[in-house]
Image (cartoon, rainbow, N blue to C red):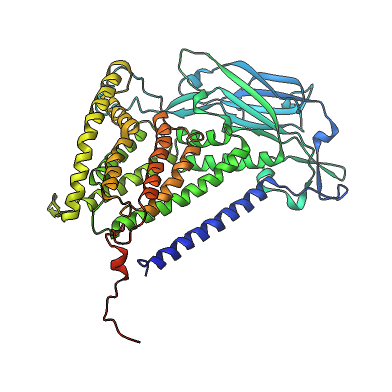
Length: 535
């Protein structure tokens, strides 16, 4: 039932319906996060009023300790004696690094907001939070001009995580005098809320928050035995209640990803989306990401169904299919070598597997196993496919005159002037630069075949259109997600390719006698399969 056109339409409609429900549900959840119901009657006993409404004189004190509970001693590194919660500031201090921390240990920061003139340890109305100033990460290997890193068997010293210094500490306090309703107290804020009784009134102390999303990989400094002091930039700014709740949820999401195996670098890509992007643009990015996911799924679905039902390679450039398979595998290996975000790496890996399957279909390859040794048998081509292959070969002949010298020249230039971690890194970078810079040239054989046949009916247009939408969405992501510059430029290169295909679709109108993407003509589909009869 799923193989009929109506079946595909209903399945696509179902997916789009689920997508719309998902987007509406996400909007409702986001509204519930940023909106907090205030206590409407301030005289009501359920109201929790802010301590800041009394304009108390406050002090900000920051200590370092080897343990989060400060057992074993603590050291004052900074204090703001006349702390104004409405005034933002940024200070840089030098922090003494204990010997245990220098020996691949940890160090914590304890940030206190308390009454001025007394130490936080004596103030019962103080609020404090603990932030880890160190994190463990595998150091980036040193690069040299084609000098491979030699390691003995079993030597894992290069891959051992070492302690790194977080050179930024970002603090926020909710400055708005919001009155909470005890019955509608948000669960995310509850863990940051300290309430005390003042007669019949309930008062909550300042909402202090440590912005962990601001801790970026680019700010990390590797800790070694030689440096006894390291710089720490302390930043402070106010934060609205809605943004605080949103930030809490985002930090919890990043922490969950790390528990599922995301590395510090993978988590850093997610942090960059939130920290380095305007909130309104970030909201747009969420919707763009949702549409990208939808179009990705529909493109994969239509591409697979197209190749699954395809009977003839007439009008299809088999060399373009083979090149696309090779280029996607090279790009995947390059992204893996560059330790790119999983947000980019996983779709590239799935795309590579699909391209390998498409090569098997295009060349009609059958695999037979004799024990552990596979045997490959290639199918035969009919006359129309042989004519397509002749045009394809002719186009590749002219293309090779331009492509090969450019790729070899680029590889030699990189060999002489650029620095790489190893020979493998140079090889992958040279291949991927050829793919990115000149990969669009390999679309020319398909354009040439289209020109010779004066038709584009043999192309998978549904999958093409979904991919075209995603290409323009990728242009937005190119400015949001961290990725290699060459991969970013390739996103814009694909725009040109799809525009050329659209021009050919307009240039060659539909002819019902030509083959469609499944190797059938519309005239053949409309012919009755049984005997004609009179009414």
